[in-house]
Every structure is written in C-alpha cells, then in structure tokens.
Length: 338
Length: 177
Picture 1 (cartoon, rainbow over the protein chains, first blue to last red):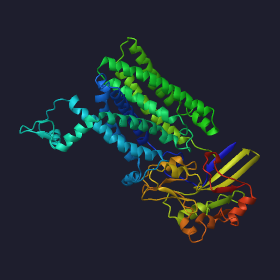
Picture 2: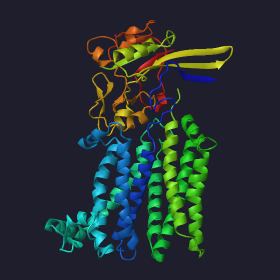
Picture 3: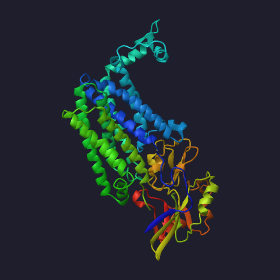
C-alpha cells in the first residue's frame, strides 16, 4: 500500500484537490477552431481543384461558418484568460517551442483570410440586397452607395475597397492555397496544444494532433453536407464523412493501444475510459453516438434509405464537441504520481 | 551558477514551518501556498514507512513551463531560478498544465505565481525563507556548480531521489533518503 497526502493544507484554487485550470472555454474553442479549419479546408481544396461551380456550398456558402466560429472561439479564449488585459503580449513575440504561440499567430492569419474569402463571395450568394431604414441599412450605408430612397446595393462607397475586392477576387487561387495550409495548421494545432503537455499523460502522445485534425475535418464536412441543397454534393460529403469517421476510429484505437502499451501513468489514463468515470461519456456518447451511428446513417442513406441529413450531421457535431470536452476534462485529472 | 536544494527526509518531521515562513516572507495571499508538505505512507502494518517531504517548484533544468509559455513570461534567471514576469503573463494556464508537480497557481490578480527560491534573499547572500526557518535543519540551499558548497557535498555523500524523474524535467531539488 502506498498513500500520498498533502498534509500542510494546501488548497490553491483550481489546483487542489484536482487540477482543473481549463473549464468549458478551451474545449469549446478547440471544437470551433476544428470546425472552422474543416470548413475552410474543403472550401480551399475544391476551389483549387476547379470545382467551385460543382460544389458551390463547400466553396461559397459553408465558409460563412468559419469566421463566425473563429470569432466565437476567440471570445471563449479571451474569457479563459485570467490576466485578460495583457492578451496582446501574445503578439509581442514568436515562440516556436510553444504551441499556443503558434496558435495565436495562425489565428492572426486565418481570421482575416476567412473573412476576405467569405466577403468576396457575398455578392454571388446574395445578388440583390435591399435594406431600407433600420440598423442594418444604416450600417451598410457607411460603406455602400445608396440613393435617396435609402436603398442600399453592393456598390462600394470607396474606391480603395472595390480595388481591394477586385485584387482579392483575381487572386483567389493564392488565397485558397494560404487557407489550405493555414487550416491544416489550425486543425493540427488544436491537438498539439494538448499533446505538448508532458505532465498530463492522457494528452502527451503523438496521435492527438492528427486525431483532432481528422475530427475537425469531419465536423466541417458534416456542416457542408447539412447546408448543401445539391444532392450530388451531399453525397460526396457524406462519403468524405464516412472515410473520416473510419480514420478517426482507427486513430482512437491507436491512441488507446499506445496507452495500454505505455508506462503506468498512461495505463492509468486509459483506465479512465475503460471502466473509469469517462467510460459512458466517451464510449457511448462520443464513439457510438458521435461516430458509429452517423456513419451507419450515412451508409444507409447512400444505399437509398431516406434519412434526414440533419441527423448524421448533428450527431457528428455533437460527438466532436463532446470529444473535446472529454479529452480536456480527463486529461487534467491524469498526472505523474510520486 | 546553479541553485539547488537538498532536503533530508530523515530529518523532516512535517511541521509546515517552511510553508508559513514562505507565506509570511512573500506576502502570499490568504488560502494559497507556494510550498507544501507531502506525507507518504508505504507498506502494510506492522512494517510501514513514513516519509515527509517539503515540496515546491523544482526549478527544473528542462522546464516544460518555460517551453509552453506563449509570451515568454515564464523565464529562467541567473542561477537557474524559474520566474514569471507579471506584466507579460496573460493567465492562459499553459504553464500550470505543463508542470508535473502542480507547483504553479493563478494569483488572484490573474498572473501565475510560484516559488522564486526567494531570489530577493538569495541575491543578498541569504538562504530562502523556508530553509532559514527549518527547526530540524533538514534543508540545504546553495550552488550546485560549486563542489565545495554544503548542498553539493551532501548530495555527493548521501543517497537521494528527485520527484517524477520519468517526466524528464531534471529537477534541482534533491530528497535525501
């Protein structure tokens, strides 16, 4: 028998009795970051493959999710900081050793890129807008031309904005390549962020980066599938989703194989999922409800059964969100024992 | 110059004087502690062993906290002491997550706080507060690079262990066993 106790009454907030430094903000951000990465990856990929007319939702419409998700994620990140007013210190230095520094800089790049990408397609998606008086009308009239009837159209008020828009539309290919690369970095980083902490045995493994990337791509593909009205496009993303789910299950198997073949602290970490307190959350909700069920629904749909597209899409999004909550919560419990 | 500490677990009685000394010297906020006492009980009655350890930041040689800090607020000063610059810390918690010893915590003002090896005392040639108050004289502080320092001599002659060596952090606090 061995028993370890802190006997001097240490009770540091968020550290004792069990480390719980990161709350809901971090897993929510990891989910939103992965979702944005997934959506942008497919937008850039199908643009580069010259299929933007064939897969309009993926390239033109679904990317609207990305800037919204990123901004919400950034708000969550800011809420997580305990010394909020100093957040700008992130941008005074580049620290290659620190995944969080990488993440901060990638977000600095991908946030404006995603906004520009979406903005260059707005005229195509909504060819006519007629906003009369009211809040949005006033807001639009700051940057768009409008006549006496307060009608607003898509003509920019300032020449430099329309010049910039033309420049961006002419260079969409460059934008797409930048988005493709930065979305992969963003997707991988959400996992590497955790795996860089060798003090938390559940996180400290090499497969977490690829696993989070694949999970993010699959939530992205599910959103595109859900938004799409084109049957062919839905079918394509349904197939992509099935493939990604299979890869994800394969990675999860490897994750736990690695733990069970690892040192004591990693075996302890794996026990949280095999009979421990996260068994139900992970086994039932993440793996069965969030991965296997949507895959089954999608296979059924591809074979001609009618399944509403929202069902697998929602399950995948729910599974992806819960997966991140489980990993962040469980990882903070695992530790070195001495 | 490499500051380190040796703590004699055979002499330590777990009185927590070091904890109170630190709280007083460094004006630690009520309810927090930069150092603490761990009690380990091993074996089955009647053959049991008891060990007390006074623990704190290990001022590691391979510092995961400094590595994962996104702003460079966590840094190493002369003598290998790991410190946090309050005005650079954003309170993200990365260093807290990366410490295998749970030696860091959030100060109520938001930045991350931890043991400083009482660098303000050490700069004047004094021992850290915890070392200087120990009633059993079980703690030794000094320069590990200096072969003639008390701490170097004692870890050269006694058996010792460090905490969680498998975490790869190369701690600079040695527990004499």
